[in-house]
Length: 393
Ligand code: NAI
Ligand code: SOE
Image (cartoon, rainbow, N blue to C red; front, side, top):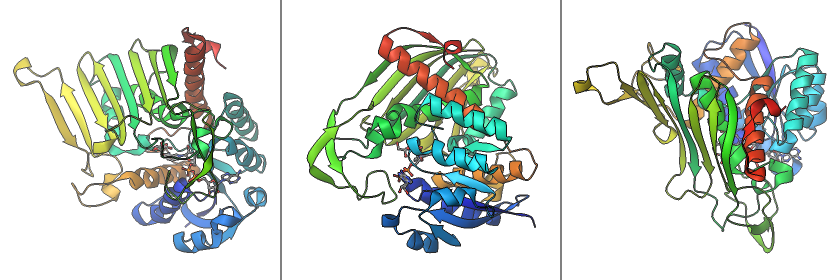
């Protein structure tokens, strides 16, 4: 069986999910290439040896620059903070490697553009981990829209609401514009912009009515490295520093196919812990997805006689009918957060092995389209006017 040597750059929260994905994918799927967990990079103080031993990486290093150029590596997978996506990605691409990168593709539109350009010139395959596309319920929503079951899409209602960022949380990299690019916007709106593009099959053509707010203006400084979660183990100190990103960004959008939509990303939306939702209303039907109930898709079939129209809850856990789940457990045995990443690892291996992915998988250019929407919304929020996407390059 042909193999692919994978290098992982970073070992924090996403380092753990991606390690789990590369470790599971060969067992649950039959990819055309078998993933080999070749080498993980971590910073010295993170103890990369311990991480490698725990997750099954054959080797570990504290030198990412040599790793991403190593002739032994076939795919470089990047799970560092947003400002640190472009440097390893460009180095890997220049060395002719396929490259997978966490979302948002970059902290800035210019970094994203350079990454796209580098990949185009080198003609290498690239991937971005918009993992919610790989939830079976989201895949089913994409399929229903494509089959015309919703008719013409009129409304898109997307919100990604979390509530972890109260004032006890210290000044993580996620609150620093120079490291993250933006706050909830790039972190969460990036996901729902991508999901909306994926499920509707439409591009966002214009953004307006944008609002950005930072409720907590300073936080206690922190030192040390990621403990593998978002905030756990990150103690603050006595001194404070400024928060330079948003806590919440909301905006409206017009889609290329005529739909209108709203987007909301928030980190202090008390009561919503990881509530990533998408609702579409079409001329023939509607769907609702909520990641807090990720195994379910709500479907409303408006072609049925009025007397029996109503929301149907579909449990997307049937192998013959729903994507990916047939490779996991017997029908109706639920899956969770980590499975989306394994499903994506499978589709990456399919593409690199010359096969079609289960569903379209975002490459750097695709993720750049999402980054343009993020940028348009920031311009709209800052300058107070609508922005047409063809003005944002
Ligand atoms: P984290 O802080 O837990 O881990 C970051 C890793 O990068 C650590 O190993 C750290 O040592 C390393 N790192 C930091 N600065 C570095 C530098 N200058 N040079 C080399 N290595 C450096 O961060 P987390 O949560 O894993 O996020 C990483 C990326 O994954 C971000 O782009 C984030 O937006 C994305 N993410 C995506 C998620 C998804 O659902 N797809 C979920 C969480 C994060
Ligand atoms: C924190 O907001 C976070 O981990 C994001 O970084 C991820 O992208 C999202 O999927 C879950 O929440």
